[in-house]
Image 1 (cartoon, one colour):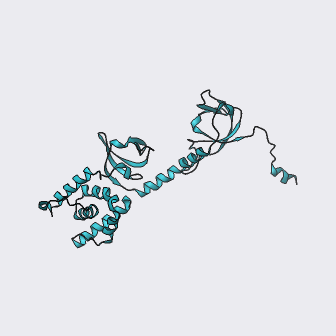
Image 2 (cartoon, helix red, strand yellow; image 1 turned 90 degrees about the horizontal axis):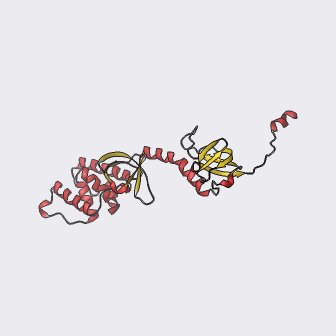
Image 3 (spheres, rainbow, N blue to C red; image 1 turned 120 degrees about the horizontal axis):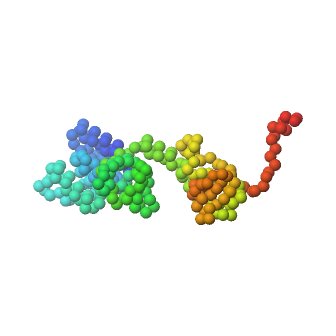
Length: 254
């Protein structure tokens, strides 16, 4: 169960409690959360820290089958909450940054409290990109989170050009090297955003490779120099002039 669905069911469950004044364990929303088992515990404990209530304690008890509440604490909301939260900390059921991809998060990093949208993680999971900055995951303490579907959809749209370029990059067989000097190429500039609408790929250009630097870090196309990693070569054209016939002249001559 994702966070958005959990929060929807939990909200409905709380609304039922307000009208019934007791925890309805037969509620469809209660049962839907219960069926998720231990996977939903981080979300339950996260809510419990903010809003201790009997519905959450009941769910925790049924999912974990814990019997750790002493007789003298039974019926005391604050004491039972403290016992369960201590157990959660000891068993690492705290909501962490890895559960929050594509969500807005309020978090503590070193001595600063920040907020932002969790974009993605590095392959090693040691780093996470929140908004435009990268952070070390082990230094992040999650304080709160909300799921922002509109922002998620906007983010996915913004990622389209990048993902398409990466697919082209994987297929690319043409390296930028000295032997390209004098050849005519079709290419894209990966960071060329002029005249683009979000979601569009950069335009395809044609040009002649005039020079390649000795270390192959730079390439000159026409009169301009570029970083080699900015240029995605799509195809090398044969270096010969092709006779081009304007068919409109045919129509005019007929």
